[in-house]
Length: 106
Image (cartoon, rainbow, N blue to C red):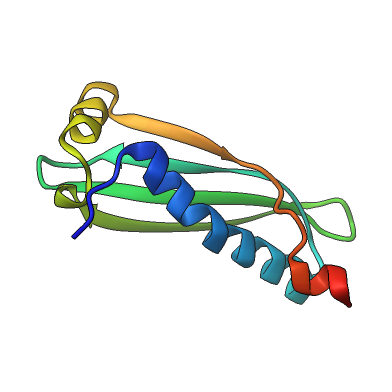
């Protein structure tokens, strides 16, 4: 098992989140505006990952997509666990994804 620091964890989820955003934009005809990837200390053994994605629909009304999951602290490097214990919550902005290479070729 590979342990990660918090930035590595966020980067690990970035590609998957880009795919999710592009999929939601295409299927629901929404425009992605921004979002947050939030890592939160839960217990000595668990932390949570929360994504909040914000979109505008064709009528300029806001729509939110969110997900929440828990992970074991053992997946984090000791210094990442310490940082999360001290700060309790780390928030990363989710930038709009770059268009996938497949879309560019089409």
